[in-house]
Length: 317
Ligand code: UDP
Ligand code: MG
Image 1 (cartoon, rainbow, N blue to C red):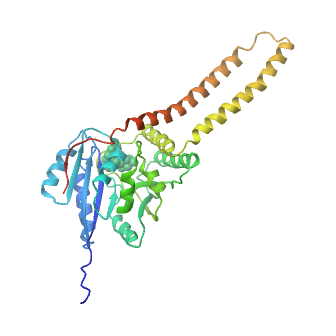
Image 2 (image 1 turned 90 degrees about the horizontal axis):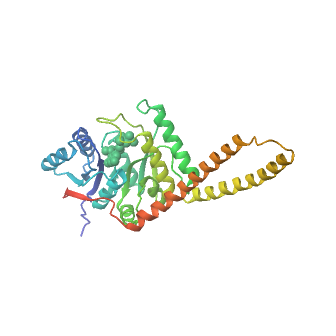
């Protein structure tokens, strides 16, 4: 008997968190359709996650899913944040690979083709990192992003490349592992590195946001940096200890100085130095308490074992 195996059609799930992206849903769907038109050997479906949008995103998704077989959606009961939306999408994914991508077309869907090609060569994770050779990203944005990765790399035990994004293809094997993690505070950019496997990084130039505005202000990015660091390392706790130790030593040196100045009969002129010392040590103590509190807060949240998200309604195939 001759071997008459059909070429196996593989299926790819495109996972798209959407928070107030009503104007981007249709253009995004068309862009993905265009990519897969040139990839007939792959089946695909798009899983949108409506992350508690306050605009028409939900309505747009419901009507699009009604006419387009390839469009599925999950509708959250409120905003749970991008990483939790990604978790929901990965949990719903049954394909041979999943691609996580932003809804605003800043992650060029055309790159999915290249990702699939690397995946077929055996890479289990193919992720895109930002090249900054473009005018769509502001100077401040570039700088904060640069500092963000510098800080995370300095402080944590995982190596994140500058500009690593949430645009990536993940093999089913890795999706299963990610879905089994019991982590309360999900930070996929770090987790993906942490799980290992054969990984490949490809560059991309982010496009301008198609519709709407970024959801990440500078304060939100700062919060993200703190989450990124505290999810992967306890080094800041050691830093707190070292700092405390160093300043205790320094103040020990300060005491002989006070004694000597008493001996030399200086009048009570120490007001400025006392205030400065109190303010400085007060600040240090608050900072260190803050660091400890952040970790304690994580333990607290983890101990509650709350779900990452709540789905109000869904349409999955
Ligand atoms: N997003 C989300 N929940 C949020 C914030 C953002 O699902 O709470 C989605 C958003 O709809 C987009 C992606 O995450 O698809 C990236 O967000 P954004 O474009 O605002 O981030 P930026 O590209 O500016 O880093
Ligand atoms: Mg964006």
